[in-house]
Length: 253
Image (tube, rainbow, N blue to C red; front, side):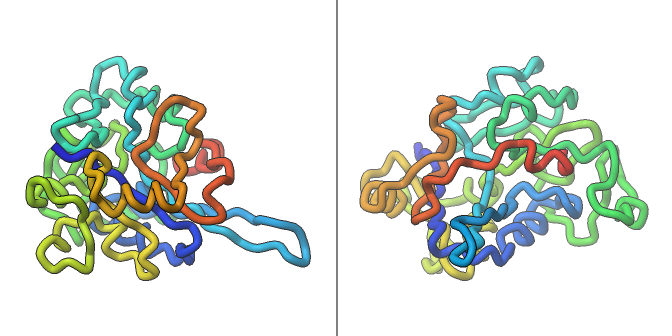
């Protein structure tokens, strides 16, 4: 069984936000509810200051703090699904403990107030207890894994586009947009990355490109001191910067 992981090369990222848009379209999220956002920070001092970019998906941690604090066990890590962390919307009570526990600020609760005005939910009212009825609905639905149109009163998060990844051939080392045989299974953010800053593959396969990149280019994990052990690695000159704290996204919570 694969252990899915992502590598992001910060030297290649241009901050174009194509990954953010693709993720929203693929996962039926509300405007402003960005499971995959790209943060920016300023490096250096004037006159040599530079703007840098930090893409931030769910880290799909090996030891996820969000799982440990969930009182209903709605949040869980599934080793049979590549080690991806899911939210079972049938069990989630919207207590937000997981949002507080996550050191990366990559969990979302969008049921209280519109993230962006005007509230698009007025134009596309909800059906069957869901937050809204988007005009571009992805037909895939699996509430046990937090996939589909989000219901009211629950937390949501990135799933590495598991509804696509699960169809990948067994034993494959990498899911590459340039490989016509597997490109349909590549996560949306990886597939739409124009500068090819993202790589996705099996961390347990020593022959995978993600493993080679981590080893050859000294990939690092954000906030590794927390003990969460992310399955997302960063490369490049900016990879050593501290991760943004959840307070940077309080307006999205």
